[in-house]
Length: 135
Ligand code: B12
Image 1: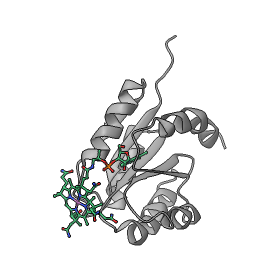
Image 2: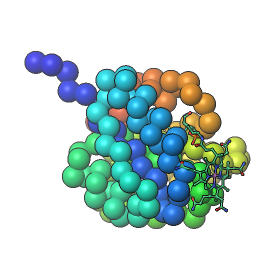
Image 3: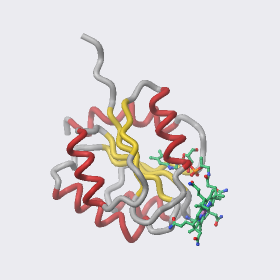
Image 4: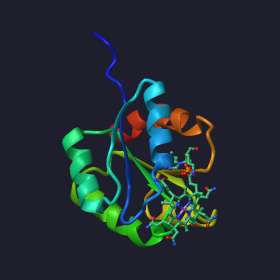
């Protein structure tokens, strides 16, 4: 039987327009053999969780460039908990102050990848998605 690919949801959160990074990341993940669900811009936390549940993704990846990440992330993490998806890896990327990385992790984000084209996030997903789902 063929291996089932890792499934990743890539999304923007709230009124966050710049979406090129999300597209680049989605392309890189597909090139690495993962299945990617790429949502349109302007998603609410609840819509993101609905899509993640319906698509049964292993990873929720959020691309943040609007500066609204600290305000909206608690709502997203609450929606993830309410939707019973706390066993999914949550990763963030985008452009925001480096000191926000620790704050996001305290809010429950598993890892944050900023401004580079390296495949660091691909390795991280490959190495961590299964452990989180079976935790
Ligand atoms: C193009 C651009 C726009 C375009 C976007 C067009 C589009 N459809 O994408 C437009 C004109 C719409 C725009 C609007 C705005 N922009 Co603008 N924009 C840029 C600009 C010049 C380039 C962004 C870009 O496309 N980069 C190329 C992509 C490939 O890179 P990236 O997004 O960083 O993604 C990479 C990584 O961050 C990471 N990554 C990104 N997402 C994810 C997700 C995951 C899961 C992972 C693992 C990794 C990851 O991997 C990607 C590949 O390496 C940047 C400045 C800059 N040089 O970065 C400013 C910038 C992003 N914009 C900025 C701002 C302030 C705005 C506005 C708020 C301006 C305004 N006042 O209206 C609005 C946004 C309004 C809103 N509500 O969102 C600021 C953001 C500051 C911040 N967040 O702290 C920046 C950084 C400019 C600046 N130096 O001040 N913008």
